[in-house]
Image (cartoon, rainbow, N blue to C red; front, side, top):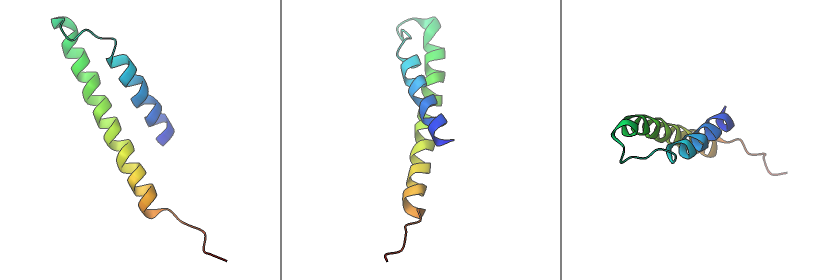
Length: 61
């Protein structure tokens, strides 16, 4: 799931770069994609922090 979310965030970043924010018609859609991308980045970061904090390590032998 995390890999899919990371790929979706990357696609959102590339997709957002294709819009001209000086054009009134495209600015609303670009803002929506930007918001979804920021939410995705937040989710990926939170999941990565939880994986790092609660990861199970092998006991030393």
